[in-house]
Image (cartoon, rainbow, N blue to C red):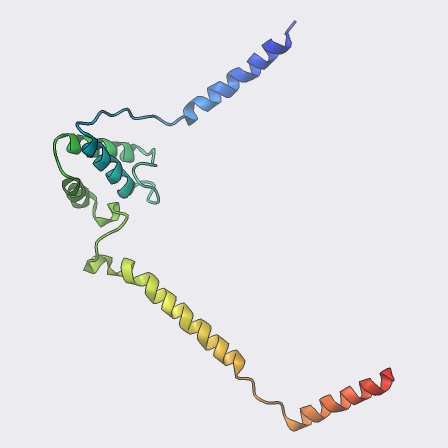
Length: 158
């Protein structure tokens, strides 16, 4: 006969087996200096995962993100600067790999587009408000009909 403890253990085994794939891999890295470690974590926080596109390298578990983290680590351990790593990534993957792309001709729309869109929306909202405010005065016949209805209503209530 199965006891209460044995039954709980039977339920625990599938739960543990299902949870194993959900665990994220932890990368244990050793750095040459605290400055290299700081540069590494700054870079993986600033560089975009090209697969996820809305995550940085630090938060992504995609295989490409793992490779890019490894490449970043290797370059920094070899004595490359942060700018060297950024230049390498941009040369290989384009400005899209940067969360804050530089202001260039091909990224101008990224920088100016939101402001243009905001101005367009403001213009349309102000235009609609002005259009709704410009109410023409009612015709004299309409005013007379309204007075007549109000007078009839007052006489019925008294």
